[in-house]
Length: 475
Image 1: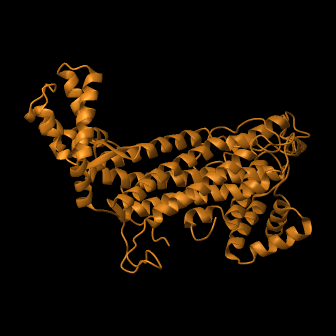
Image 2: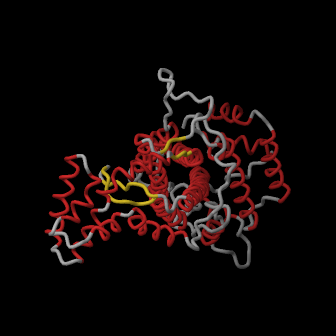
């Protein structure tokens, strides 16, 4: 992910320093559990490890020192372990474990917390949509299907459609997070053999020694490291050294859904800009084109589309890592995950931030919107007229052909304003002038859309409150 598009919170979560700190905190948690089960690690020694975490955080040479160790050992996790043990002055971290016990649990924690952060930011986009839908619930606009004028809707209804898509994505994210099971501690091949051997070693001589395999399972189940609030499900159960990469895909899919919902919003803003109905507000110093001084471009909406393509690329990478593991595990997925996981979540957060920015800067040309409705008003009423003709006794196919013939004629002649009189004068049309005018009235035509918006927003829980400090300034 380019630093040009990074969001501060997500960039910090996936930074090397944060990953290293989380790994050290996990090591300390495991050491405490091992000490409780009889492994000779004193409380003072654990305090030294905790102090080392704080000391490392206060220093500036952490990453350089770890890189020097890795250059000698050729193993990144082992380099971080050696550095931590040296800083603490002990050799207790990582007893009975394999690298994946640390690396994969921390990656899962980052995935889970990243998904939580995306959900919070998606709710902020939702709050903006709800506010806009409420403010514009009655404003008539031309609804378009296949890009062509179709019927009348309202600006609020169109925005509500976007909110609905985002809401579906948020529900998918909630389900994915609720079912995202942590890997737990599996050991070198997923049997917890080394951990059980470690714990069993200190049961010798006891009158009623505990089963070391049961102890190892108990330590595993006590470490809910996938979430900071303890709401994650139980560990996923037996796996090899590495957990199945397909376990990540429900979360990945939900992220893609969130991003797609934002892209729908920004694609429509771009189309509005083409029609002259709306655009992103240009600041007094903003340049739209280096060659054409008059230009005002939907810059951030276009950026969202581009970043959406990037998100889908990262998601495709993660999908392709699923189902390719050898036996109990290998590192063939490691490089892809290191690139794709922070890339996916970082880019998705940038999409959300830019979408919120677009909504905050959205400016409508209300005169152009109203003129669009006036220009297309006769043809926008065909659905209502068709229903009225059928209700008056005409066969639907006959009514359809009758209306189509009149509309084609007035459009060809460039006289759509004469549609009312043409229909009223046609003896085949069982409606009078007043009835036709009523059916073509904009207030009548927008009533269904207004009702839908009112019902959706009345007493809803969608009013989440807009955080005006987020997303802050964007390039």
